[in-house]
Image (cartoon, rainbow, N blue to C red; front, side):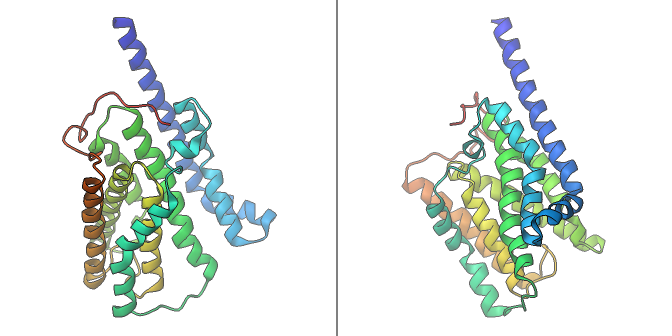
Length: 271
């Protein structure tokens, strides 16, 4: 019995080390993102493609780590990419409707100076940030260990929010950007968990929310102004309420509850 517990402890420690190593190597790569992108630009001769392949390249340690942790090569499933995209799109579009419609009505369209930049700031940012932060960092902690929702999301959200602080130019804006992106990370992680770990839900919602920020004259940073934040607050509230309604009507238990908030029973293997 004692040996069995030791073996489990060693296995958990190994998983944690692979998780930390994978994310640390990703983070080092991301810090050199521009240099990596310029390298790919020499080969593909198209900035948007270089941007895409740079994001893929910095994620190689994450793909390797998730396969090692799960002892298999089906990393799309381990990261939550095997969920229903159609359901995720419909749900996310409904969630984001107040922000998109309100942005168009109250703020008006901004001139789009670069379509590739628009795609990079919306689709690519939404996809890869959710893939690496929620699918891998939060997802592996919450799904593979006994850590509950709060400890699993805390470090992930701190790092995610810190990565957006470049948008701030003063202490007030810095605090606003940090809190906004931190809470956004918590929301996307919660939606990921409650939609049966279908990562397409936070990916598409994140992309649509970024799209609203890029298309409409709401704000120059993630913090936003009061009007923009009212619309964003409605979108957030709608996503939470409709997710709870979905869970109740389908008879599914909440993944995040009092039993899984801090610590939870032994984790189930990922399929």
